[in-house]
Image (cartoon, rainbow, N blue to C red; front, side, top):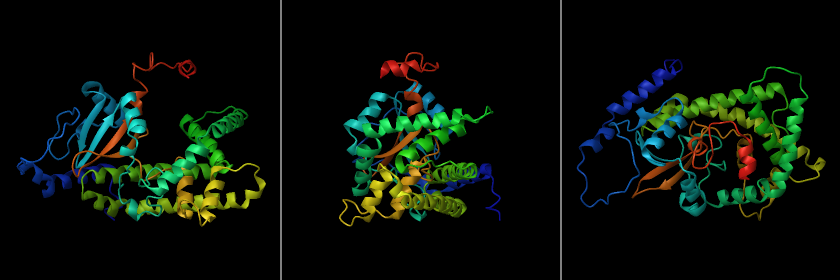
Length: 358
């Protein structure tokens, strides 16, 4: 009952206290440095506090806090939050090095808090470990979902979605909700030839699930920063995370069945048709199951929950940094999009800039 009524403030305070008294956390402070250990040439880093590291520099808007630090210490920044290590990239040129020049070196994915205990586990594309499954899905995305043909097809889908919105009566709109709906419907039409949020009650149910999953994911990630507290986070919020995932599973299973039942009515194949072929083909390059199909739908709906750090302006990758140490890598899109070296007057609303740059 106490756990059920614990507020966010109490949860964060408990995490801090337990991490502070953890003896394994204090041990490195008294440990003599090894003479044989090779020193690492780490990127610039602000002064850190014992135990919590650089956690005190981060405010409610994570991407703004990271941008402020990067402005002072440079586009490549090293941070330590509890026991977790992070490198923050706020430069387009460095991001290009990661995603293009050295993409294989950064291809590994992290193990997120209690993901092994969730129904989908690491079946999703963004959290799948680098291997056959990841390469198979990436190949499909690059040749089908992101091909020139699909981009042109998406232009028609986006136009139709905007026409539908324009035909409605004049009313006050929540732009965050409408943009999410437009994005989800456009992406889902390309992936499954159907709109995901047609019915108002279905749309509202999904939005509530997104909000709840973000809350649980944020608390799980916070506990994961303090080592063994990830187990405490699962005790407090693990069952809630599983319940939310099962609710998603119910919705996604219904979408998948609808798609299978209407397969004969479609003239053109969508991405799910290709996945279903691989699902039924025993000689497929990579054998996928129904969990993989629904995990893909979860990504198509922009609902990749419990696996992404709670900020919309960062993408997380895993990269090997030093002996036996893993460091998470964050691309600060907020800072890159406001880089004056790339954009003139980056904080002004000037949509024409994209026409010129393209």
